[in-house]
Length: 523
Ligand SMILES: Cc1cc2nc3c(=O)[nH]c(=O)nc-3n(C[C@H](O)[C@H](O)[C@H](O)COP(=O)(O)O)c2cc1C
Ligand code: SF4
Image 1 (cartoon, rainbow, N blue to C red):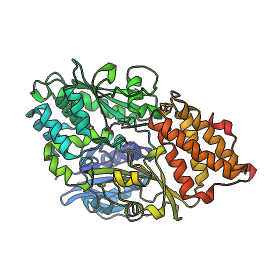
Image 2: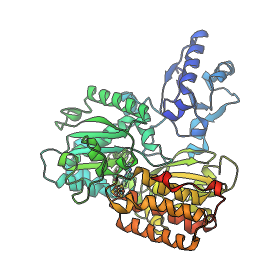
Image 3: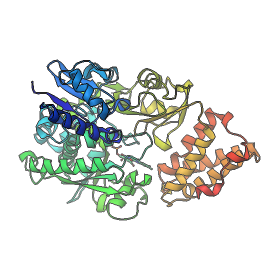
Image 4: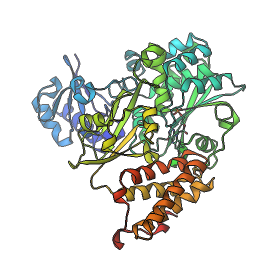
Protein backbone atom coordinates (compact mmCIF):
# COMPACT_ATOMS: atom_id res chain seq x y z
CA UNK A 1 0.00 0.00 0.00
CA UNK A 2 1.25 3.47 -0.94
CA UNK A 3 2.24 5.36 2.24
CA UNK A 4 -0.08 8.27 3.09
CA UNK A 5 0.75 10.83 5.77
CA UNK A 6 -2.10 12.85 7.26
CA UNK A 7 -1.22 16.26 8.74
CA UNK A 8 -4.19 18.34 9.93
CA UNK A 9 -4.89 21.72 8.34
CA UNK A 10 -7.45 22.60 11.03
CA UNK A 11 -6.85 26.02 12.62
CA UNK A 12 -6.18 24.43 16.03
CA UNK A 13 -3.39 22.31 14.53
CA UNK A 14 -2.06 25.21 12.45
CA UNK A 15 -1.89 27.35 15.59
CA UNK A 16 0.58 24.89 17.11
CA UNK A 17 2.74 24.48 14.01
CA UNK A 18 1.08 21.95 11.67
CA UNK A 19 2.27 23.79 8.55
CA UNK A 20 5.88 23.74 9.74
CA UNK A 21 5.57 20.03 10.49
CA UNK A 22 4.14 19.46 6.99
CA UNK A 23 7.09 21.33 5.42
CA UNK A 24 9.60 19.40 7.51
CA UNK A 25 8.02 16.09 6.47
CA UNK A 26 7.98 17.07 2.77
CA UNK A 27 11.63 18.16 2.94
CA UNK A 28 12.70 14.98 4.73
CA UNK A 29 10.90 12.81 2.19
CA UNK A 30 12.71 14.62 -0.63
CA UNK A 31 16.09 14.54 1.10
CA UNK A 32 15.81 10.78 1.72
CA UNK A 33 14.47 10.01 -1.74
CA UNK A 34 11.27 8.58 -0.27
CA UNK A 35 7.76 8.95 -1.59
CA UNK A 36 4.57 9.32 0.40
CA UNK A 37 1.36 11.17 -0.32
CA UNK A 38 0.67 14.00 2.11
CA UNK A 39 -2.98 14.68 2.88
CA UNK A 40 -3.96 17.76 4.86
CA UNK A 41 -6.94 16.41 6.78
CA UNK A 42 -9.21 18.03 9.35
CA UNK A 43 -8.63 17.54 13.04
CA UNK A 44 -9.74 14.45 14.94
CA UNK A 45 -10.43 16.81 17.84
CA UNK A 46 -7.77 15.63 20.30
CA UNK A 47 -6.46 19.12 20.72
CA UNK A 48 -3.82 18.42 23.34
CA UNK A 49 -2.13 16.08 20.84
CA UNK A 50 -2.05 18.51 17.90
CA UNK A 51 -0.36 18.51 15.52
CA UNK A 52 -1.35 14.84 15.47
CA UNK A 53 0.21 13.19 12.43
CA UNK A 54 -1.12 9.89 11.15
CA UNK A 55 0.34 7.36 8.75
CA UNK A 56 -1.76 4.89 6.80
CA UNK A 57 -0.24 1.44 7.11
CA UNK A 58 -1.34 -2.05 6.09
CA UNK A 59 -2.83 -2.54 9.57
CA UNK A 60 -4.68 0.77 9.75
CA UNK A 61 -3.81 4.35 10.59
CA UNK A 62 -1.16 4.95 13.25
CA UNK A 63 -0.96 8.25 15.13
CA UNK A 64 1.92 10.32 16.49
CA UNK A 65 1.67 13.50 18.48
CA UNK A 66 2.10 16.21 19.37
CA UNK A 67 4.71 16.46 16.59
CA UNK A 68 7.18 19.36 16.32
CA UNK A 69 9.32 20.03 13.23
CA UNK A 70 12.36 18.95 15.26
CA UNK A 71 10.78 15.49 15.79
CA UNK A 72 10.51 14.74 12.08
CA UNK A 73 14.01 13.33 11.46
CA UNK A 74 13.71 10.93 14.38
CA UNK A 75 10.25 9.83 13.20
CA UNK A 76 11.72 8.85 9.84
CA UNK A 77 14.73 7.20 11.55
CA UNK A 78 12.33 5.11 13.62
CA UNK A 79 10.40 4.05 10.49
CA UNK A 80 7.15 5.89 11.08
CA UNK A 81 6.13 5.39 7.44
CA UNK A 82 5.53 1.77 8.48
CA UNK A 83 3.87 2.79 11.76
CA UNK A 84 6.93 1.93 13.85
CA UNK A 85 7.37 2.74 17.53
CA UNK A 86 8.63 6.18 18.55
CA UNK A 87 8.39 8.18 21.79
CA UNK A 88 5.52 10.14 20.16
CA UNK A 89 3.65 6.96 19.12
CA UNK A 90 0.01 6.97 20.15
CA UNK A 91 -0.83 3.60 18.59
CA UNK A 92 -3.59 2.88 16.13
CA UNK A 93 -5.82 5.91 15.74
CA UNK A 94 -8.99 3.88 16.04
CA UNK A 95 -7.84 2.53 19.43
CA UNK A 96 -7.26 5.96 21.00
CA UNK A 97 -9.55 5.94 24.08
CA UNK A 98 -10.76 9.52 23.43
CA UNK A 99 -11.99 8.44 19.99
CA UNK A 100 -13.11 4.94 20.94
CA UNK A 101 -15.56 6.25 23.54
CA UNK A 102 -17.29 8.49 20.99
CA UNK A 103 -20.27 7.98 18.72
CA UNK A 104 -19.27 9.95 15.68
CA UNK A 105 -22.24 10.55 13.43
CA UNK A 106 -21.88 14.23 12.49
CA UNK A 107 -18.09 14.10 12.74
CA UNK A 108 -17.73 10.65 11.15
CA UNK A 109 -15.44 11.95 8.38
CA UNK A 110 -13.76 14.86 10.16
CA UNK A 111 -10.04 14.14 10.41
CA UNK A 112 -10.46 11.00 8.32
CA UNK A 113 -10.79 12.35 4.78
CA UNK A 114 -9.21 14.96 2.57
CA UNK A 115 -11.69 17.82 3.18
CA UNK A 116 -11.71 18.97 -0.46
CA UNK A 117 -11.87 15.62 -2.20
CA UNK A 118 -15.32 14.68 -3.49
CA UNK A 119 -14.14 11.15 -4.26
CA UNK A 120 -12.99 10.77 -0.64
CA UNK A 121 -16.32 12.20 0.47
CA UNK A 122 -18.21 9.64 -1.61
CA UNK A 123 -15.93 6.82 -0.44
CA UNK A 124 -16.96 7.59 3.13
CA UNK A 125 -20.72 7.51 2.37
CA UNK A 126 -21.04 11.17 1.35
CA UNK A 127 -23.90 12.29 -0.94
CA UNK A 128 -26.05 9.25 -0.17
CA UNK A 129 -28.45 11.40 1.86
CA UNK A 130 -28.77 13.93 -0.96
CA UNK A 131 -29.32 11.17 -3.52
CA UNK A 132 -32.11 9.75 -1.35
CA UNK A 133 -33.62 13.22 -0.88
CA UNK A 134 -33.68 13.82 -4.63
CA UNK A 135 -35.94 10.79 -5.04
CA UNK A 136 -38.38 12.12 -2.41
CA UNK A 137 -41.04 14.82 -2.19
CA UNK A 138 -40.19 17.87 -0.05
CA UNK A 139 -42.87 16.95 2.50
CA UNK A 140 -41.38 13.46 2.92
CA UNK A 141 -37.89 14.82 3.48
CA UNK A 142 -39.29 17.13 6.17
CA UNK A 143 -41.10 14.17 7.75
CA UNK A 144 -37.86 12.19 8.02
CA UNK A 145 -36.15 15.16 9.69
CA UNK A 146 -39.11 15.59 12.07
CA UNK A 147 -39.15 11.88 12.92
CA UNK A 148 -35.42 11.86 13.62
CA UNK A 149 -36.04 14.15 16.61
CA UNK A 150 -33.24 16.50 15.51
CA UNK A 151 -33.27 19.77 17.44
CA UNK A 152 -31.34 22.90 16.54
CA UNK A 153 -27.73 22.67 17.71
CA UNK A 154 -27.20 26.45 17.68
CA UNK A 155 -28.62 27.02 21.13
CA UNK A 156 -32.39 27.11 21.32
CA UNK A 157 -32.94 23.39 20.61
CA UNK A 158 -35.96 24.07 18.39
CA UNK A 159 -37.15 21.01 16.39
CA UNK A 160 -35.59 21.27 12.93
CA UNK A 161 -38.43 19.44 11.15
CA UNK A 162 -41.05 21.91 12.41
CA UNK A 163 -38.98 24.86 11.20
CA UNK A 164 -38.49 23.29 7.76
CA UNK A 165 -42.18 22.50 7.51
CA UNK A 166 -43.07 26.14 8.16
CA UNK A 167 -40.73 27.29 5.39
CA UNK A 168 -41.95 24.57 3.04
CA UNK A 169 -45.57 25.60 3.50
CA UNK A 170 -44.86 29.36 3.37
CA UNK A 171 -45.81 31.16 0.18
CA UNK A 172 -42.92 32.82 -1.61
CA UNK A 173 -41.33 32.87 -5.03
CA UNK A 174 -37.90 32.97 -3.40
CA UNK A 175 -36.85 31.07 -0.27
CA UNK A 176 -33.46 30.84 1.42
CA UNK A 177 -31.40 28.51 3.58
CA UNK A 178 -29.08 30.42 5.90
CA UNK A 179 -26.46 28.51 7.82
CA UNK A 180 -25.54 30.17 11.09
CA UNK A 181 -21.80 29.65 11.41
CA UNK A 182 -21.14 32.67 13.59
CA UNK A 183 -20.09 30.42 16.50
CA UNK A 184 -19.62 33.13 19.08
CA UNK A 185 -19.98 31.00 22.23
CA UNK A 186 -16.97 30.73 24.49
CA UNK A 187 -15.27 27.34 24.33
CA UNK A 188 -16.89 26.32 21.03
CA UNK A 189 -15.21 25.28 17.81
CA UNK A 190 -17.33 22.45 16.37
CA UNK A 191 -18.76 24.54 13.51
CA UNK A 192 -15.28 25.64 12.54
CA UNK A 193 -14.00 22.07 12.64
CA UNK A 194 -16.77 20.91 10.29
CA UNK A 195 -16.15 23.77 7.85
CA UNK A 196 -12.41 23.06 7.82
CA UNK A 197 -12.53 19.27 8.10
CA UNK A 198 -15.68 18.14 6.24
CA UNK A 199 -17.14 21.08 4.29
CA UNK A 200 -19.13 18.90 1.88
CA UNK A 201 -21.31 17.57 4.69
CA UNK A 202 -22.53 21.13 5.31
CA UNK A 203 -23.05 21.75 1.59
CA UNK A 204 -24.97 18.48 1.33
CA UNK A 205 -27.10 19.32 4.37
CA UNK A 206 -27.95 22.74 2.97
CA UNK A 207 -28.81 21.32 -0.45
CA UNK A 208 -31.18 18.83 1.23
CA UNK A 209 -32.76 21.71 3.17
CA UNK A 210 -33.24 23.48 -0.17
CA UNK A 211 -34.92 20.45 -1.75
CA UNK A 212 -37.14 19.98 1.29
CA UNK A 213 -38.37 23.56 1.53
CA UNK A 214 -38.18 24.85 -2.04
CA UNK A 215 -35.28 27.21 -1.27
CA UNK A 216 -32.87 27.68 -4.15
CA UNK A 217 -30.23 29.86 -2.55
CA UNK A 218 -28.12 29.36 0.54
CA UNK A 219 -25.75 31.51 2.56
CA UNK A 220 -23.24 30.53 5.20
CA UNK A 221 -22.74 33.40 7.62
CA UNK A 222 -19.53 33.28 9.61
CA UNK A 223 -17.09 35.65 11.29
CA UNK A 224 -13.85 37.09 9.99
CA UNK A 225 -11.99 35.37 12.85
CA UNK A 226 -12.40 32.11 10.92
CA UNK A 227 -10.10 32.69 7.91
CA UNK A 228 -9.24 29.02 7.37
CA UNK A 229 -12.87 27.91 7.54
CA UNK A 230 -13.83 30.67 5.10
CA UNK A 231 -11.12 29.67 2.62
CA UNK A 232 -11.93 25.95 2.84
CA UNK A 233 -15.68 26.50 2.49
CA UNK A 234 -15.18 28.79 -0.52
CA UNK A 235 -13.00 26.19 -2.23
CA UNK A 236 -15.48 23.41 -1.37
CA UNK A 237 -18.38 25.42 -2.85
CA UNK A 238 -16.37 25.84 -6.07
CA UNK A 239 -15.63 22.10 -6.20
CA UNK A 240 -19.28 21.27 -5.47
CA UNK A 241 -20.36 23.51 -8.36
CA UNK A 242 -17.87 21.84 -10.70
CA UNK A 243 -19.14 18.40 -9.65
CA UNK A 244 -22.79 19.36 -10.17
CA UNK A 245 -23.64 19.07 -6.46
CA UNK A 246 -24.58 22.75 -6.53
CA UNK A 247 -26.02 24.70 -9.45
CA UNK A 248 -29.08 24.79 -11.69
CA UNK A 249 -29.68 21.04 -11.38
CA UNK A 250 -28.42 19.47 -8.14
CA UNK A 251 -26.88 16.08 -9.08
CA UNK A 252 -28.96 16.17 -12.27
CA UNK A 253 -32.24 16.33 -10.31
CA UNK A 254 -33.66 19.39 -12.04
CA UNK A 255 -33.76 21.18 -8.64
CA UNK A 256 -31.64 24.31 -8.43
CA UNK A 257 -29.58 25.11 -5.36
CA UNK A 258 -26.51 27.28 -5.02
CA UNK A 259 -24.83 29.00 -2.13
CA UNK A 260 -22.17 31.43 -1.04
CA UNK A 261 -20.12 32.38 1.97
CA UNK A 262 -20.72 35.69 3.79
CA UNK A 263 -18.37 37.08 6.40
CA UNK A 264 -19.33 39.32 9.32
CA UNK A 265 -17.02 41.31 11.54
CA UNK A 266 -17.59 39.10 14.58
CA UNK A 267 -20.21 40.55 16.92
CA UNK A 268 -21.71 38.05 19.35
CA UNK A 269 -25.21 39.36 18.74
CA UNK A 270 -24.85 38.66 15.00
CA UNK A 271 -25.23 34.98 15.92
CA UNK A 272 -28.80 35.74 16.97
CA UNK A 273 -30.76 34.78 13.89
CA UNK A 274 -32.61 38.03 13.15
CA UNK A 275 -29.55 40.14 13.83
CA UNK A 276 -27.61 37.83 11.51
CA UNK A 277 -30.21 38.31 8.77
CA UNK A 278 -29.85 42.09 9.12
CA UNK A 279 -26.08 41.75 8.87
CA UNK A 280 -26.46 39.50 5.79
CA UNK A 281 -28.62 42.18 4.20
CA UNK A 282 -25.80 44.66 4.76
CA UNK A 283 -27.47 46.40 7.70
CA UNK A 284 -26.30 46.89 11.27
CA UNK A 285 -26.60 43.72 13.34
CA UNK A 286 -29.64 44.74 15.39
CA UNK A 287 -32.15 42.18 16.64
CA UNK A 288 -35.57 42.19 14.94
CA UNK A 289 -38.74 41.78 16.98
CA UNK A 290 -40.52 38.44 16.45
CA UNK A 291 -43.08 37.75 15.01
CA UNK A 292 -42.64 37.47 12.12
CA UNK A 293 -40.35 34.47 12.52
CA UNK A 294 -37.60 34.10 9.88
CA UNK A 295 -39.28 30.93 8.61
CA UNK A 296 -42.05 33.19 7.28
CA UNK A 297 -40.25 36.52 6.78
CA UNK A 298 -36.53 36.09 6.95
CA UNK A 299 -33.77 37.14 4.57
CA UNK A 300 -34.93 40.04 2.37
CA UNK A 301 -38.43 39.37 3.75
CA UNK A 302 -38.56 35.86 2.22
CA UNK A 303 -39.24 32.52 3.97
CA UNK A 304 -35.90 31.38 5.36
CA UNK A 305 -34.53 28.28 7.05
CA UNK A 306 -31.98 29.41 9.63
CA UNK A 307 -30.00 26.53 11.06
CA UNK A 308 -26.74 26.04 12.83
CA UNK A 309 -23.83 24.26 11.10
CA UNK A 310 -24.21 21.17 13.28
CA UNK A 311 -27.96 20.90 12.66
CA UNK A 312 -27.39 21.03 8.88
CA UNK A 313 -24.36 18.73 9.05
CA UNK A 314 -26.50 16.09 10.82
CA UNK A 315 -29.02 16.00 7.97
CA UNK A 316 -27.11 13.92 5.35
CA UNK A 317 -26.73 10.99 7.74
CA UNK A 318 -30.41 11.17 8.72
CA UNK A 319 -31.46 11.04 5.06
CA UNK A 320 -28.96 8.25 4.41
CA UNK A 321 -29.62 5.98 7.40
CA UNK A 322 -33.20 6.97 8.17
CA UNK A 323 -34.97 8.76 11.03
CA UNK A 324 -35.03 5.74 13.36
CA UNK A 325 -31.29 5.20 13.13
CA UNK A 326 -30.62 8.73 14.38
CA UNK A 327 -33.47 8.76 16.86
CA UNK A 328 -32.24 5.60 18.55
CA UNK A 329 -29.32 7.57 20.02
CA UNK A 330 -29.97 9.87 22.97
CA UNK A 331 -32.48 10.14 25.80
CA UNK A 332 -35.90 11.71 26.37
CA UNK A 333 -36.54 14.54 23.93
CA UNK A 334 -32.82 14.91 23.19
CA UNK A 335 -32.27 12.57 20.30
CA UNK A 336 -29.15 11.71 18.36
CA UNK A 337 -25.66 12.81 19.23
CA UNK A 338 -24.09 16.08 20.30
CA UNK A 339 -20.57 17.20 19.38
CA UNK A 340 -19.47 18.43 22.81
CA UNK A 341 -16.56 20.82 23.03
CA UNK A 342 -14.29 20.53 26.08
CA UNK A 343 -12.38 23.74 26.74
CA UNK A 344 -10.91 26.03 29.37
CA UNK A 345 -8.82 24.56 32.17
CA UNK A 346 -9.05 20.90 31.09
CA UNK A 347 -6.31 18.36 30.52
CA UNK A 348 -7.77 16.69 27.43
CA UNK A 349 -9.62 19.44 25.61
CA UNK A 350 -11.23 18.85 22.25
CA UNK A 351 -14.25 17.63 20.35
CA UNK A 352 -16.16 14.72 21.84
CA UNK A 353 -19.26 13.57 19.97
CA UNK A 354 -21.57 11.35 21.95
CA UNK A 355 -25.22 10.44 22.46
CA UNK A 356 -27.20 12.71 24.75
CA UNK A 357 -27.38 11.40 28.31
CA UNK A 358 -23.68 11.45 29.25
CA UNK A 359 -22.99 13.21 32.57
CA UNK A 360 -20.70 16.14 33.28
CA UNK A 361 -18.77 13.84 35.66
CA UNK A 362 -17.93 11.50 32.78
CA UNK A 363 -17.11 14.37 30.46
CA UNK A 364 -14.89 16.35 32.81
CA UNK A 365 -13.10 13.56 34.66
CA UNK A 366 -13.20 10.31 32.66
CA UNK A 367 -12.84 11.90 29.24
CA UNK A 368 -11.32 15.29 29.95
CA UNK A 369 -8.91 14.04 32.63
CA UNK A 370 -9.74 16.88 35.08
CA UNK A 371 -8.08 20.26 35.01
CA UNK A 372 -4.94 21.09 33.03
CA UNK A 373 -3.59 22.88 36.11
CA UNK A 374 -3.97 19.71 38.21
CA UNK A 375 -6.01 21.66 40.78
CA UNK A 376 -9.54 20.66 41.82
CA UNK A 377 -12.39 21.61 39.48
CA UNK A 378 -14.49 24.42 40.90
CA UNK A 379 -17.11 24.97 38.20
CA UNK A 380 -17.98 24.54 34.57
CA UNK A 381 -19.84 26.96 32.37
CA UNK A 382 -21.96 25.14 29.81
CA UNK A 383 -23.55 26.78 26.77
CA UNK A 384 -21.37 29.82 26.16
CA UNK A 385 -21.30 33.20 27.87
CA UNK A 386 -25.02 33.03 28.61
CA UNK A 387 -24.79 29.57 30.18
CA UNK A 388 -24.96 28.72 33.88
CA UNK A 389 -22.00 27.88 36.09
CA UNK A 390 -22.42 24.44 37.61
CA UNK A 391 -20.53 23.33 40.74
CA UNK A 392 -19.21 19.75 41.00
CA UNK A 393 -22.29 18.78 43.06
CA UNK A 394 -24.28 19.11 39.80
CA UNK A 395 -21.97 16.97 37.69
CA UNK A 396 -24.41 14.05 37.67
CA UNK A 397 -26.85 16.01 35.47
CA UNK A 398 -27.28 14.16 32.17
CA UNK A 399 -26.50 16.06 28.99
CA UNK A 400 -30.09 16.62 27.96
CA UNK A 401 -31.96 19.81 27.02
CA UNK A 402 -34.73 19.32 29.59
CA UNK A 403 -32.41 18.27 32.44
CA UNK A 404 -30.28 21.37 31.93
CA UNK A 405 -33.33 23.63 31.81
CA UNK A 406 -34.64 22.03 35.03
CA UNK A 407 -31.32 22.98 36.66
CA UNK A 408 -31.52 26.60 35.46
CA UNK A 409 -28.94 26.03 32.77
CA UNK A 410 -28.73 25.45 29.06
CA UNK A 411 -26.83 23.21 26.68
CA UNK A 412 -26.52 25.92 24.03
CA UNK A 413 -23.95 24.93 21.44
CA UNK A 414 -22.49 22.37 23.87
CA UNK A 415 -19.32 24.21 24.78
CA UNK A 416 -18.03 23.36 28.27
CA UNK A 417 -15.49 25.69 29.86
CA UNK A 418 -13.76 24.31 32.96
CA UNK A 419 -12.51 26.43 35.91
CA UNK A 420 -10.31 25.28 38.77
CA UNK A 421 -10.54 26.34 42.41
CA UNK A 422 -8.65 29.59 41.79
CA UNK A 423 -11.63 31.00 39.83
CA UNK A 424 -13.39 33.96 41.43
CA UNK A 425 -17.09 33.57 40.69
CA UNK A 426 -17.94 37.15 41.54
CA UNK A 427 -15.48 38.24 38.83
CA UNK A 428 -17.11 35.77 36.45
CA UNK A 429 -20.54 37.22 37.26
CA UNK A 430 -19.22 40.71 36.61
CA UNK A 431 -17.71 39.50 33.36
CA UNK A 432 -21.16 38.26 32.26
CA UNK A 433 -22.60 41.76 32.67
CA UNK A 434 -19.56 43.37 31.10
CA UNK A 435 -19.80 41.05 28.09
CA UNK A 436 -23.50 41.76 27.71
CA UNK A 437 -22.90 45.53 27.93
CA UNK A 438 -20.22 45.34 25.24
CA UNK A 439 -22.14 43.03 22.92
CA UNK A 440 -25.68 44.37 23.41
CA UNK A 441 -27.26 45.56 20.16
CA UNK A 442 -28.88 48.34 22.20
CA UNK A 443 -32.41 47.81 21.00
CA UNK A 444 -34.08 47.14 24.35
CA UNK A 445 -33.64 48.84 27.74
CA UNK A 446 -33.33 45.86 30.15
CA UNK A 447 -30.25 44.65 28.29
CA UNK A 448 -28.73 47.97 27.20
CA UNK A 449 -29.00 49.61 30.63
CA UNK A 450 -29.36 46.54 32.84
CA UNK A 451 -25.99 45.06 31.91
CA UNK A 452 -24.17 48.29 32.79
CA UNK A 453 -26.07 48.62 36.08
CA UNK A 454 -25.33 44.97 36.87
CA UNK A 455 -21.58 45.54 36.62
CA UNK A 456 -21.95 48.61 38.84
CA UNK A 457 -23.87 46.64 41.47
CA UNK A 458 -21.16 43.96 41.58
CA UNK A 459 -18.53 46.66 41.96
CA UNK A 460 -20.45 48.02 44.93
CA UNK A 461 -20.51 44.55 46.50
CA UNK A 462 -16.77 44.29 45.91
CA UNK A 463 -16.30 47.64 47.66
CA UNK A 464 -18.32 46.36 50.63
CA UNK A 465 -21.14 48.90 50.16
CA UNK A 466 -24.37 47.55 51.74
CA UNK A 467 -23.72 44.02 50.48
CA UNK A 468 -27.08 42.43 51.36
CA UNK A 469 -29.09 45.28 49.74
CA UNK A 470 -26.91 45.15 46.65
CA UNK A 471 -27.25 41.36 46.43
CA UNK A 472 -31.06 41.70 46.60
CA UNK A 473 -30.86 44.41 43.92
CA UNK A 474 -28.78 42.05 41.77
CA UNK A 475 -31.50 39.44 42.05
CA UNK A 476 -34.14 41.98 41.06
CA UNK A 477 -32.08 43.21 38.13
CA UNK A 478 -31.59 39.64 36.90
CA UNK A 479 -35.36 39.11 36.95
CA UNK A 480 -35.96 42.29 34.98
CA UNK A 481 -33.41 41.29 32.35
CA UNK A 482 -34.72 37.73 32.18
CA UNK A 483 -38.35 38.74 31.72
CA UNK A 484 -38.00 42.04 29.86
CA UNK A 485 -35.26 41.53 27.25
CA UNK A 486 -36.13 41.18 23.60
CA UNK A 487 -33.63 38.39 22.88
CA UNK A 488 -31.59 35.85 24.79
CA UNK A 489 -28.48 38.02 25.00
CA UNK A 490 -30.09 40.18 27.66
CA UNK A 491 -32.57 37.50 28.68
CA UNK A 492 -30.01 34.82 29.50
CA UNK A 493 -27.20 36.94 30.98
CA UNK A 494 -28.84 36.30 34.38
CA UNK A 495 -27.97 32.59 34.04
CA UNK A 496 -24.23 32.96 34.66
CA UNK A 497 -24.84 35.72 37.23
CA UNK A 498 -27.54 33.94 39.26
CA UNK A 499 -25.81 30.56 39.09
CA UNK A 500 -22.56 32.09 40.33
CA UNK A 501 -24.46 33.78 43.15
CA UNK A 502 -26.54 30.70 44.02
CA UNK A 503 -23.75 28.14 43.95
CA UNK A 504 -20.81 30.25 45.14
CA UNK A 505 -22.26 32.85 47.56
CA UNK A 506 -18.99 32.80 49.51
CA UNK A 507 -17.27 34.50 46.55
CA UNK A 508 -19.58 37.53 46.71
CA UNK A 509 -18.32 40.04 49.20
CA UNK A 510 -15.95 42.93 49.86
CA UNK A 511 -12.55 42.85 48.20
CA UNK A 512 -9.32 44.69 48.93
CA UNK A 513 -9.43 48.10 47.18
CA UNK A 514 -6.74 47.06 44.67
CA UNK A 515 -8.99 44.28 43.29
CA UNK A 516 -12.11 46.34 42.64
CA UNK A 517 -12.79 47.64 39.16
CA UNK A 518 -14.43 50.91 38.25
CA UNK A 519 -17.98 50.51 36.89
CA UNK A 520 -17.10 52.73 33.91
CA UNK A 521 -15.13 49.82 32.42
CA UNK A 522 -18.37 48.27 31.26
CA UNK A 523 -19.86 51.38 29.72
C1 LIG B 1 -27.01 36.36 21.38
C2 LIG B 1 -27.23 35.12 20.59
C3 LIG B 1 -26.18 34.56 19.88
C4 LIG B 1 -26.38 33.42 19.12
N1 LIG B 1 -25.31 32.89 18.45
C5 LIG B 1 -25.50 31.80 17.67
C6 LIG B 1 -24.43 31.29 16.90
O1 LIG B 1 -23.30 31.77 16.95
N2 LIG B 1 -24.68 30.20 16.12
C7 LIG B 1 -25.94 29.63 16.05
O2 LIG B 1 -26.12 28.69 15.29
N3 LIG B 1 -26.95 30.10 16.76
C8 LIG B 1 -26.78 31.18 17.56
N4 LIG B 1 -27.84 31.68 18.26
C9 LIG B 1 -29.17 31.02 18.09
C10 LIG B 1 -29.85 31.54 16.82
O3 LIG B 1 -30.60 32.70 17.13
C11 LIG B 1 -30.82 30.50 16.23
O4 LIG B 1 -31.64 29.99 17.24
C12 LIG B 1 -30.10 29.34 15.55
O5 LIG B 1 -29.15 29.76 14.61
C13 LIG B 1 -31.13 28.46 14.84
O6 LIG B 1 -30.51 27.33 14.30
P1 LIG B 1 -30.75 25.89 14.94
O7 LIG B 1 -32.25 25.72 15.07
O8 LIG B 1 -30.17 24.95 13.97
O9 LIG B 1 -30.09 25.87 16.26
C14 LIG B 1 -27.67 32.82 19.06
C15 LIG B 1 -28.72 33.37 19.78
C16 LIG B 1 -28.50 34.49 20.54
C17 LIG B 1 -29.65 35.08 21.30
S1 SF4 C 1 -31.63 41.78 24.67
FE1 SF4 C 1 -29.83 43.04 24.16
S2 SF4 C 1 -29.05 42.17 22.28
FE2 SF4 C 1 -31.16 41.42 22.54
S3 SF4 C 1 -32.46 42.90 21.47
FE3 SF4 C 1 -32.31 43.62 23.56
S4 SF4 C 1 -30.58 45.06 23.50
FE4 SF4 C 1 -30.43 43.83 21.67
